[in-house]
Image (cartoon, rainbow, N blue to C red; front, side, top):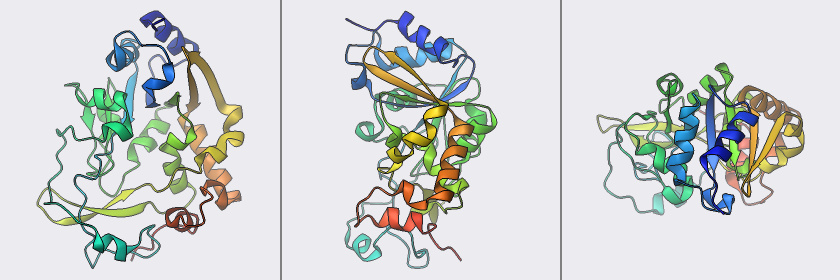
Length: 275
């Protein structure tokens, strides 16, 4: 049995999302049954309710370049020797109107949102955000190569929501912003600026340990089942505050548990050391 517009409308109403900016992390497979109209119908339903939809739209590594010798901070969650052994294609220049995205990694909703003519996209070549709706420009305009989490800062200021649509906290990219609020430096990777010069681009690290925050955010979570998809909704500012406080009290809470995970080790230690 398919999921129709009325069911989507009811969920948006029950979770008090109408008129709000909402960052969506999603799995279309989680619905179990087919959604009438697919990902586009979901986006349209949010927009019809006055929402602004924001998504994480990582470019899938197309614009990454080899780390320049003079841009290699310590404690950066990476083995530079291993990166030097990798093969790199011809460097390309990122532009705001490109639709490059890892469809498999990001999902169908972010992929579909990028095809919409009115969407706005951020200025970080590796980890851009994208948004559509009345507050899209306001959410996205502050993002840069260095200020990767600016859209989340603005989402919190606007009393926005984070909606996990059939996925768990390990897909909640905003918890990387919570790491920054807790005092950790975002990791650095590399791309070319519009003039073709190498620049540092900030980004997140390992998120496999983020499910460890489930107990400390349960009190601020609102749930709604749509088909077989569990929608978990959080006030963005409260989610960041709760998780940042948890990391200050117990820095290891975000660690994935893999003893070989250099990204988690370096994140827990405070992130890259920049001159």
